[in-house]
Image (tube, rainbow, N blue to C red; front, side, top):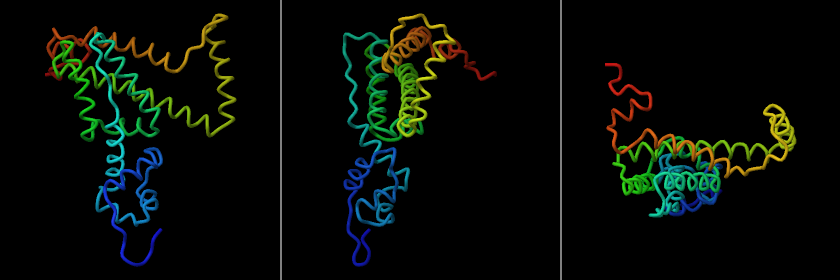
Length: 228
């Protein structure tokens, strides 16, 4: 760290680049300050502490996520594409799942991502309020699953003993479930696709353009009057 003399000037762009290089999972104000050769106080002139730094980096990364809208996809296909893209992006950028789970959207990039999906659903007949229900629900499920996978991956990397135990866990699972011989192995992505397809079909069965908000809430087990 630089000491003495006039402190170097830094820009928000430099902070963003240093933060991205560090990654969301290891991001700290002190770490970025050390990378830039400044004191943490220099960063506080540009970002609102740890949360501000995290938001700067997280929104910068989210700005790169684009989810194509294929006119050939029906609503279920579009939502599955959305879910797969979110999961893949979270697994590619460690710490992103926790970032999205903490607060979403918390910046312009996140808001633009959500708005784009709501627009895509609008082209399939869903008004914005119902599109928001669908997009937010699918996003929450996808990000939550990505967070579990990320944690599992990190713990296996950090613990050879746990990795060995995972083999035994699979054997026990097969015994409990009486898995038939020759049962095909599936990847984590295949499993995710299966589960999300089922969830999306369930959502679409109840969240329909021909229903009012109150009818939708009631169909999903929530009293729209709040018990009044």
